Amino acid sequence: MAGREVALGRAVSGEESVRDLKCQVAAALGVCVKQIQILAGSREMEDPVAEALGISAPEPSVVLRSAEACREHLEVLRRYKGEQGQQRAWLTVEKDLTFPAPKGINVNMMPFIMGDRLSIPEELRGYWPIIEQCSGSDDNRSHNIPSSKKCPSCHRSRMVFSEEHIVEDCEFCPEACGGPAWHCLHCHAKVCTTCCPPLKSHAQKPEVWYLTIQEGLVPKGTTQRRPGLHIDGGGLVLKEGGRWSAEWLNWGEVFEEFTGGIYMASNVSNTCKVWNVRVKDQPEVCGPNGSLEHLREIMPEGRLLEEGELVWITDTTPHESVPLDEEVRRQFIRVVTKSVSVWYEQHSTKNPKGVVPDPAVT
Image 1 (cartoon, rainbow, N blue to C red):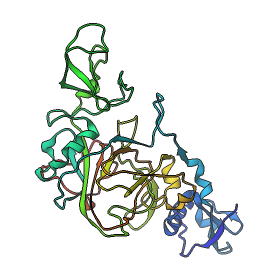
Image 2 (cartoon, helix red, strand yellow; image 1 turned 45 degrees about the horizontal axis):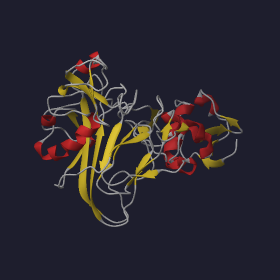
Image 3 (cartoon, rainbow, N blue to C red; image 1 turned 180 degrees about the vertical axis):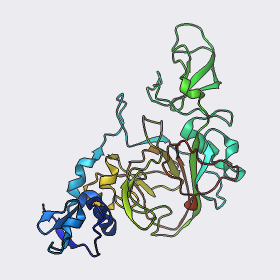
Image 4 (cartoon, rainbow, N blue to C red; image 1 turned 30 degrees about the vertical axis):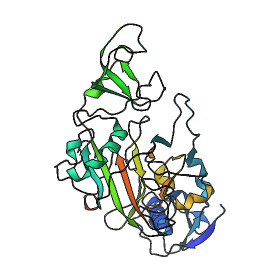
Protein backbone atom coordinates (compact mmCIF):
# COMPACT_ATOMS: atom_id res chain seq x y z
CA MET A 1 0.00 0.00 0.00
CA ALA A 2 1.48 3.34 -1.04
CA GLY A 3 2.41 5.81 1.70
CA ARG A 4 5.29 7.03 3.79
CA GLU A 5 6.58 5.22 6.84
CA VAL A 6 6.46 7.00 10.19
CA ALA A 7 8.10 5.84 13.42
CA LEU A 8 5.49 4.98 16.05
CA GLY A 9 7.36 7.07 18.57
CA ARG A 10 6.19 5.48 21.83
CA ALA A 11 6.04 2.21 23.68
CA VAL A 12 3.11 -0.06 22.82
CA SER A 13 1.20 -2.03 25.44
CA GLY A 14 0.15 -5.59 24.67
CA GLU A 15 -3.22 -4.83 26.28
CA GLU A 16 -4.11 -2.35 23.54
CA SER A 17 -6.01 -3.30 20.41
CA VAL A 18 -4.83 -2.41 16.93
CA ARG A 19 -7.81 -0.07 16.73
CA ASP A 20 -6.66 1.68 19.92
CA LEU A 21 -3.18 2.10 18.47
CA LYS A 22 -4.54 3.57 15.26
CA CYS A 23 -6.54 6.16 17.22
CA GLN A 24 -3.50 7.31 19.20
CA VAL A 25 -1.30 7.52 16.12
CA ALA A 26 -3.96 9.32 14.06
CA ALA A 27 -4.45 11.91 16.80
CA ALA A 28 -0.71 12.46 17.15
CA LEU A 29 -0.35 13.03 13.40
CA GLY A 30 -3.54 15.09 13.06
CA VAL A 31 -5.09 12.67 10.56
CA CYS A 32 -7.84 10.02 10.70
CA VAL A 33 -8.00 6.32 11.53
CA LYS A 34 -8.69 5.44 7.90
CA GLN A 35 -5.26 6.74 6.91
CA ILE A 36 -3.31 4.69 9.45
CA GLN A 37 -1.86 1.25 8.80
CA ILE A 38 0.33 -0.30 11.51
CA LEU A 39 2.87 -2.86 10.36
CA ALA A 40 4.69 -5.56 12.26
CA GLY A 41 7.56 -6.15 9.89
CA SER A 42 6.07 -6.29 6.38
CA ARG A 43 2.62 -7.47 7.50
CA GLU A 44 -0.28 -5.49 8.91
CA MET A 45 -0.51 -5.86 12.67
CA GLU A 46 -3.47 -7.88 13.96
CA ASP A 47 -5.02 -8.51 17.36
CA PRO A 48 -3.97 -9.69 19.84
CA VAL A 49 -1.28 -7.01 19.91
CA ALA A 50 0.64 -8.86 22.63
CA GLU A 51 1.57 -11.62 20.16
CA ALA A 52 2.65 -9.09 17.57
CA LEU A 53 4.98 -7.55 20.15
CA GLY A 54 6.77 -10.74 21.10
CA ILE A 55 10.49 -10.81 21.86
CA SER A 56 11.41 -11.77 18.32
CA ALA A 57 8.83 -9.56 16.64
CA PRO A 58 10.08 -6.64 14.51
CA GLU A 59 9.57 -3.08 15.73
CA PRO A 60 6.14 -1.74 14.66
CA SER A 61 5.99 0.99 12.06
CA VAL A 62 3.23 3.12 10.58
CA VAL A 63 2.19 3.71 6.99
CA LEU A 64 0.29 6.95 6.44
CA ARG A 65 -2.17 6.59 3.58
CA SER A 66 -3.02 9.58 1.41
CA ALA A 67 -6.23 11.59 1.68
CA GLU A 68 -7.50 9.76 -1.42
CA ALA A 69 -8.19 6.75 0.82
CA CYS A 70 -11.04 8.77 2.35
CA ARG A 71 -12.68 10.18 -0.77
CA GLU A 72 -15.43 7.53 -0.74
CA HIS A 73 -16.58 8.88 2.64
CA LEU A 74 -17.27 12.38 1.30
CA GLU A 75 -20.76 12.71 -0.14
CA VAL A 76 -20.62 15.74 -2.44
CA LEU A 77 -24.15 17.09 -2.95
CA ARG A 78 -25.71 19.33 -5.57
CA ARG A 79 -27.10 22.72 -4.61
CA TYR A 80 -30.81 22.53 -3.91
CA LYS A 81 -32.94 23.13 -7.01
CA GLY A 82 -36.33 22.09 -5.67
CA GLU A 83 -36.20 18.36 -6.37
CA GLN A 84 -38.32 16.50 -3.84
CA GLY A 85 -36.34 14.32 -1.46
CA GLN A 86 -32.95 15.75 -2.39
CA GLN A 87 -30.55 15.87 0.54
CA ARG A 88 -28.55 18.94 1.40
CA ALA A 89 -25.46 19.62 3.44
CA TRP A 90 -26.35 23.26 4.00
CA LEU A 91 -29.01 25.75 3.05
CA THR A 92 -29.59 29.48 3.33
CA VAL A 93 -32.63 29.98 5.57
CA GLU A 94 -32.78 33.79 5.58
CA LYS A 95 -30.71 36.73 4.30
CA ASP A 96 -30.18 40.29 5.48
CA LEU A 97 -30.74 39.53 9.15
CA THR A 98 -30.51 42.49 11.50
CA PHE A 99 -28.23 42.00 14.50
CA PRO A 100 -28.87 43.82 17.79
CA ALA A 101 -26.41 46.36 19.16
CA PRO A 102 -23.41 44.49 20.64
CA LYS A 103 -23.06 44.22 24.42
CA GLY A 104 -19.94 42.08 24.72
CA ILE A 105 -21.99 38.88 25.02
CA ASN A 106 -20.12 35.56 25.15
CA VAL A 107 -22.23 32.46 25.83
CA ASN A 108 -21.51 28.97 24.58
CA MET A 109 -23.96 26.07 24.19
CA MET A 110 -26.38 27.50 26.74
CA PRO A 111 -29.48 25.28 27.04
CA PHE A 112 -32.83 26.99 26.50
CA ILE A 113 -36.39 26.07 25.61
CA MET A 114 -36.92 26.49 21.90
CA GLY A 115 -39.90 28.77 21.33
CA ASP A 116 -39.88 30.22 24.86
CA ARG A 117 -38.36 33.69 24.76
CA LEU A 118 -38.48 33.92 28.54
CA SER A 119 -36.18 30.89 28.87
CA ILE A 120 -33.14 32.98 27.91
CA PRO A 121 -31.74 35.86 30.00
CA GLU A 122 -33.08 39.32 29.20
CA GLU A 123 -29.71 40.56 27.91
CA LEU A 124 -29.82 37.94 25.13
CA ARG A 125 -33.36 38.62 23.92
CA GLY A 126 -32.22 41.08 21.28
CA TYR A 127 -31.26 37.96 19.33
CA TRP A 128 -34.71 36.39 19.65
CA PRO A 129 -35.89 37.45 16.16
CA ILE A 130 -32.93 35.53 14.72
CA ILE A 131 -33.60 32.52 16.94
CA GLU A 132 -37.21 32.51 15.74
CA GLN A 133 -35.98 32.05 12.19
CA CYS A 134 -34.38 28.78 13.29
CA SER A 135 -37.63 27.28 14.51
CA GLY A 136 -40.56 29.33 13.35
CA SER A 137 -41.89 29.84 16.87
CA ASP A 138 -43.84 33.08 17.04
CA ASP A 139 -43.73 33.89 20.74
CA ASN A 140 -43.01 32.36 24.10
CA ARG A 141 -46.39 30.57 23.84
CA SER A 142 -45.41 28.44 20.84
CA HIS A 143 -42.81 25.70 20.84
CA ASN A 144 -43.49 23.93 17.56
CA ILE A 145 -40.60 22.92 15.34
CA PRO A 146 -40.55 22.80 11.52
CA SER A 147 -41.94 19.55 10.19
CA SER A 148 -41.18 17.51 7.07
CA LYS A 149 -44.53 18.56 5.55
CA LYS A 150 -44.23 20.25 2.16
CA CYS A 151 -45.75 23.68 1.61
CA PRO A 152 -48.25 23.52 -1.30
CA SER A 153 -47.10 26.97 -2.42
CA CYS A 154 -43.27 26.82 -2.43
CA HIS A 155 -42.83 23.06 -1.87
CA ARG A 156 -40.30 23.58 0.93
CA SER A 157 -40.27 21.56 4.17
CA ARG A 158 -40.70 24.60 6.41
CA MET A 159 -44.22 24.14 7.79
CA VAL A 160 -45.12 24.95 11.40
CA PHE A 161 -48.51 24.42 13.01
CA SER A 162 -49.71 26.88 15.62
CA GLU A 163 -52.99 27.84 17.24
CA GLU A 164 -51.99 31.47 16.62
CA HIS A 165 -51.71 31.15 12.84
CA ILE A 166 -55.27 31.78 11.68
CA VAL A 167 -56.52 31.37 8.13
CA GLU A 168 -59.92 32.74 7.12
CA ASP A 169 -60.04 31.44 3.55
CA CYS A 170 -57.34 28.94 2.58
CA GLU A 171 -56.39 29.43 -1.09
CA PHE A 172 -55.47 25.75 -1.37
CA CYS A 173 -58.85 24.44 -0.14
CA PRO A 174 -61.89 24.25 -2.47
CA GLU A 175 -64.24 24.86 0.44
CA ALA A 176 -64.57 27.82 2.76
CA CYS A 177 -62.64 27.21 5.96
CA GLY A 178 -61.07 28.99 8.87
CA GLY A 179 -59.21 28.51 12.13
CA PRO A 180 -55.71 27.48 13.22
CA ALA A 181 -53.39 26.76 10.32
CA TRP A 182 -49.98 25.71 9.14
CA HIS A 183 -47.56 28.54 8.42
CA CYS A 184 -44.69 28.24 5.90
CA LEU A 185 -41.50 29.80 7.21
CA HIS A 186 -40.18 30.30 3.68
CA CYS A 187 -43.02 31.88 1.69
CA HIS A 188 -45.33 32.67 4.67
CA ALA A 189 -48.31 30.89 3.12
CA LYS A 190 -51.07 29.83 5.52
CA VAL A 191 -52.59 26.40 4.92
CA CYS A 192 -55.73 25.11 6.63
CA THR A 193 -55.85 21.85 8.58
CA THR A 194 -58.17 20.33 6.00
CA CYS A 195 -55.42 20.49 3.40
CA CYS A 196 -52.66 19.72 5.87
CA PRO A 197 -53.77 17.91 9.06
CA PRO A 198 -51.66 18.61 12.16
CA LEU A 199 -49.26 15.95 13.38
CA LYS A 200 -49.57 14.40 16.81
CA SER A 201 -45.87 14.98 17.34
CA HIS A 202 -46.53 18.70 17.63
CA ALA A 203 -48.14 18.13 21.00
CA GLN A 204 -44.82 16.98 22.43
CA LYS A 205 -43.18 18.78 25.30
CA PRO A 206 -40.95 21.79 24.58
CA GLU A 207 -37.44 20.91 23.48
CA VAL A 208 -34.10 21.96 24.94
CA TRP A 209 -31.86 23.49 22.28
CA TYR A 210 -28.46 25.19 22.68
CA LEU A 211 -27.51 28.82 22.09
CA THR A 212 -24.09 30.30 21.34
CA ILE A 213 -23.56 34.05 20.94
CA GLN A 214 -20.13 35.64 20.68
CA GLU A 215 -19.48 39.35 20.28
CA GLY A 216 -16.08 40.96 20.22
CA LEU A 217 -13.26 42.71 18.41
CA VAL A 218 -11.37 40.29 16.18
CA PRO A 219 -7.79 41.26 15.23
CA LYS A 220 -6.67 41.15 11.60
CA GLY A 221 -5.42 37.73 10.49
CA THR A 222 -7.23 35.84 13.26
CA THR A 223 -10.56 34.05 13.60
CA GLN A 224 -13.30 34.60 16.14
CA ARG A 225 -14.37 30.97 16.12
CA ARG A 226 -12.58 27.66 15.68
CA PRO A 227 -10.18 27.80 12.71
CA GLY A 228 -9.54 24.93 10.35
CA LEU A 229 -11.82 22.69 8.31
CA HIS A 230 -13.98 20.51 10.58
CA ILE A 231 -17.40 19.08 11.39
CA ASP A 232 -19.19 19.15 14.74
CA GLY A 233 -20.32 15.53 14.87
CA GLY A 234 -17.80 12.87 15.80
CA GLY A 235 -14.24 11.87 15.05
CA LEU A 236 -11.33 11.34 17.42
CA VAL A 237 -12.39 12.30 20.95
CA LEU A 238 -10.03 12.68 23.89
CA LYS A 239 -11.22 10.51 26.77
CA GLU A 240 -10.34 10.41 30.44
CA GLY A 241 -6.75 9.31 30.95
CA GLY A 242 -5.52 11.01 27.78
CA ARG A 243 -6.57 8.25 25.38
CA TRP A 244 -8.14 9.04 22.01
CA SER A 245 -11.21 7.17 20.83
CA ALA A 246 -12.97 7.22 17.43
CA GLU A 247 -16.64 7.91 18.16
CA TRP A 248 -19.97 9.09 16.78
CA LEU A 249 -21.27 12.29 18.38
CA ASN A 250 -24.51 14.09 17.65
CA TRP A 251 -24.61 17.88 17.55
CA GLY A 252 -28.08 18.48 16.22
CA GLU A 253 -28.46 15.13 14.51
CA VAL A 254 -30.41 15.32 11.25
CA PHE A 255 -33.14 12.76 10.56
CA GLU A 256 -34.97 14.76 7.90
CA GLU A 257 -34.43 18.30 6.70
CA PHE A 258 -35.09 20.82 9.45
CA THR A 259 -35.80 18.13 12.04
CA GLY A 260 -32.32 18.65 13.44
CA GLY A 261 -29.07 20.31 12.50
CA ILE A 262 -27.34 23.57 13.32
CA TYR A 263 -28.18 27.17 12.44
CA MET A 264 -25.56 29.92 12.37
CA ALA A 265 -25.01 33.49 11.17
CA SER A 266 -22.67 36.44 11.63
CA ASN A 267 -22.72 40.15 10.88
CA VAL A 268 -19.49 40.11 8.82
CA SER A 269 -19.18 38.73 5.29
CA ASN A 270 -16.48 36.24 4.23
CA THR A 271 -15.66 35.08 7.75
CA CYS A 272 -17.21 31.61 7.57
CA LYS A 273 -17.07 29.02 4.80
CA VAL A 274 -19.26 25.93 4.30
CA TRP A 275 -18.94 22.98 1.95
CA ASN A 276 -21.77 21.21 0.15
CA VAL A 277 -20.55 17.86 1.49
CA ARG A 278 -21.75 15.37 4.08
CA VAL A 279 -19.08 13.27 5.78
CA LYS A 280 -19.99 9.60 6.16
CA ASP A 281 -18.46 7.27 8.78
CA GLN A 282 -17.11 10.16 10.84
CA PRO A 283 -15.14 7.99 13.32
CA GLU A 284 -13.11 6.61 10.41
CA VAL A 285 -12.32 9.78 8.48
CA CYS A 286 -12.37 12.67 10.99
CA GLY A 287 -9.32 13.67 13.00
CA PRO A 288 -9.15 15.11 16.53
CA ASN A 289 -12.41 16.83 17.51
CA GLY A 290 -13.88 16.47 14.04
CA SER A 291 -10.94 18.01 12.16
CA LEU A 292 -10.86 17.58 8.38
CA GLU A 293 -7.68 19.51 7.63
CA HIS A 294 -6.06 16.28 6.45
CA LEU A 295 -8.73 16.02 3.73
CA ARG A 296 -8.68 19.63 2.53
CA GLU A 297 -6.85 18.71 -0.69
CA ILE A 298 -9.72 16.48 -1.88
CA MET A 299 -12.56 18.82 -0.90
CA PRO A 300 -14.59 20.62 -3.59
CA GLU A 301 -14.84 24.40 -3.55
CA GLY A 302 -16.47 25.86 -0.44
CA ARG A 303 -18.74 28.89 -0.19
CA LEU A 304 -18.16 31.99 1.91
CA LEU A 305 -21.20 33.23 3.82
CA GLU A 306 -22.51 36.75 3.57
CA GLU A 307 -23.24 39.29 6.27
CA GLY A 308 -26.62 38.55 7.86
CA GLU A 309 -27.01 35.17 6.11
CA LEU A 310 -28.58 32.53 8.33
CA VAL A 311 -27.65 29.02 7.21
CA TRP A 312 -28.72 25.56 8.27
CA ILE A 313 -26.07 22.84 8.26
CA THR A 314 -25.86 19.26 9.46
CA ASP A 315 -23.42 18.05 12.11
CA THR A 316 -21.55 16.30 9.27
CA THR A 317 -21.20 19.42 7.07
CA PRO A 318 -17.59 20.69 6.75
CA HIS A 319 -17.14 24.33 7.68
CA GLU A 320 -14.50 26.69 9.04
CA SER A 321 -14.01 30.14 10.49
CA VAL A 322 -11.93 32.29 8.12
CA PRO A 323 -9.16 34.72 9.20
CA LEU A 324 -10.21 38.36 8.88
CA ASP A 325 -8.63 40.73 6.35
CA GLU A 326 -8.87 43.58 8.83
CA GLU A 327 -9.74 44.19 12.46
CA VAL A 328 -13.50 44.16 12.91
CA ARG A 329 -16.14 43.89 15.61
CA ARG A 330 -17.96 40.65 14.85
CA GLN A 331 -21.20 39.13 16.16
CA PHE A 332 -21.87 35.44 15.76
CA ILE A 333 -24.88 33.31 16.68
CA ARG A 334 -25.34 29.54 16.54
CA VAL A 335 -28.37 27.47 17.51
CA VAL A 336 -27.91 23.72 17.91
CA THR A 337 -31.06 21.60 17.90
CA LYS A 338 -31.96 19.14 20.63
CA SER A 339 -29.98 16.02 19.71
CA VAL A 340 -26.63 16.60 21.44
CA SER A 341 -24.74 13.52 22.62
CA VAL A 342 -22.59 15.26 25.23
CA TRP A 343 -22.90 18.68 26.88
CA TYR A 344 -19.49 19.69 28.21
CA GLU A 345 -20.38 21.58 31.38
CA GLN A 346 -16.87 23.00 31.91
CA HIS A 347 -16.87 24.59 28.43
CA SER A 348 -20.53 25.59 28.26
CA THR A 349 -22.63 28.41 29.72
CA LYS A 350 -25.18 27.53 32.37
CA ASN A 351 -28.58 29.12 31.93
CA PRO A 352 -29.42 31.37 34.92
CA LYS A 353 -33.10 30.66 34.17
CA GLY A 354 -32.50 27.10 35.34
CA VAL A 355 -32.85 25.33 31.98
CA VAL A 356 -30.60 22.27 31.78
CA PRO A 357 -29.98 19.63 29.08
CA ASP A 358 -32.72 17.04 28.71
CA PRO A 359 -31.31 13.81 30.26
CA ALA A 360 -33.48 11.76 27.93
CA VAL A 361 -31.54 13.14 24.95
CA THR A 362 -28.14 14.34 26.18
